[in-house]
Every structure is written in structure tokens, then in C-alpha cells.
Image: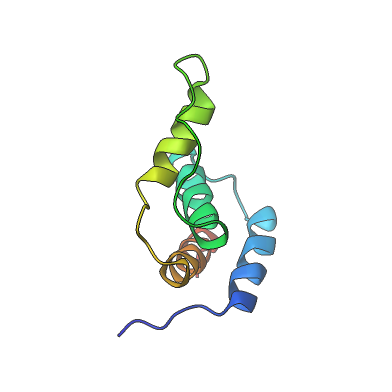
Length: 88
């Protein structure tokens, strides 16, 4: 069984995202956003943004793909992605 990240590890990873050695790609940013929202809020809420809100729509879609993922699993995945982006 995979080890789950503690809330403290999740918060520490969220703080480290601001200090990454290089800016993540758009896909990586969407992955981080979706995992962060799933871990902190749960399943996606609200209506999908309209066609003209391309950025909002992409963020909502990325979050929606995580529907059903537990907050604990989302925290663990988020910490893992941050570590990968840090080069660890």
C-alpha cells in the first residue's frame, strides 16, 4: 500500500511550489492545480466555464478528471508531483 502524505507534508509541498527551480509547463500547472483543489476542496463544483474562458475551462476540466479521488490520495499525488518537479 502506498504511503499517504500528511496534511503537514501537503502544506510544505504547496509552499515549495513557489520556489521550484524552473516554471512548470502548463500541463504540470494544471496537474498541480487539480490535485491541490481535490485535496483541499474535494470533487469539482460549479458549472464548467464557457468557451471564452479558456483558462478557467482547462482548470475546471483538469479538476473534474480527479472526481472521486480521496483527499488523502490527492495530497499524496500532489507531494509526489512537487518532488518530481524539484528533481528529487
